[in-house]
Image (cartoon, rainbow, N blue to C red; front, side, top):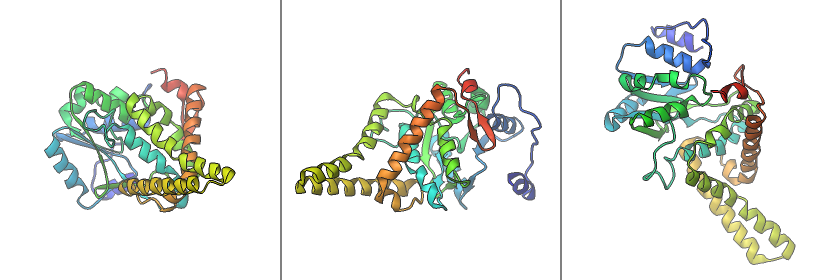
Length: 295
C-alpha cells in the first residue's frame, strides 16, 4: 500500500530485492533510501505514521530552532478497545527516554524515537547511518546513542498535532508480540534513577487496592476512604498523561489495575523471551533473540 501511495504521488520508489547478511529489514530500507537521496535534510518515517496537514512544516521549524536530531513519538490513534492495552507501554516508553520526567533538565535522552526521525545528511552518515544499528531490533535507541556519542544533540518530542500512528491494528496478539519483542531490552538502556522512578510510579498503582482489601478485612472506614482518594488521584493523573500521547479511552484510567497488570505480565514475558532466547513472531517475520544478542 505504501508503494502504491508513493507511485501515485510521483515519488521515486526503490525496490529492495534482497537483504544483506547481518541486516534487519527496517535499518536496510532506511539506509538504502538515505544513500539514494540527494537532499541535505533526511526524514525517516515509519509506514504506519500519518503527518498532519502542517506536520512537515512543524518538523522543519523544530529542526531550524534546535539545530540537532529531531525525533518524535507519534500521537497514538486508538480505534478498537483492545488497542487501549498499549497505554502503559506508551507511557513507560516515553518516560524511559529521560525526557518526559522531572529529570529532563539534568539528563540526556537515552536514544531516539524510530517512527519519526529528522536530521542533516552529514550527521547521519558521520555515525554510519542505520548501518550502525543494522542488526538491532530497537534500532532507534542504538542510532540515538550513536548521535549522542558523536556529540550531536538529540531532541525527543511528543507528536500530538503533528504526526499520528496506529500501532497495532491486527488484534490483541499484535500488541502482545509488539511489546514482547524488545521491551525488556530497552529497559536496560534506561538510567537507574529514571528506572527507579518508573518502578515506584507503577508500584504506587497497587496501593489503593491494598487499602481496599485491608479495610474489607478490618472494617476500617478511614482506610477505605483513603484508598478511594488515592485511586481517584492516580486515575486523574493517568488520564492527564494519556491525553497527551493518544486518544485512549477513559476506561483506562477508570480501570487502571487491569491495564497495569497487563503491562507487568507482558514485560515479564519479554524478559523471559530475552533470557531463554524465545523467538517472537512480529509482522510476518520472526524476531530471533539469539541472533540479535550476538551483535
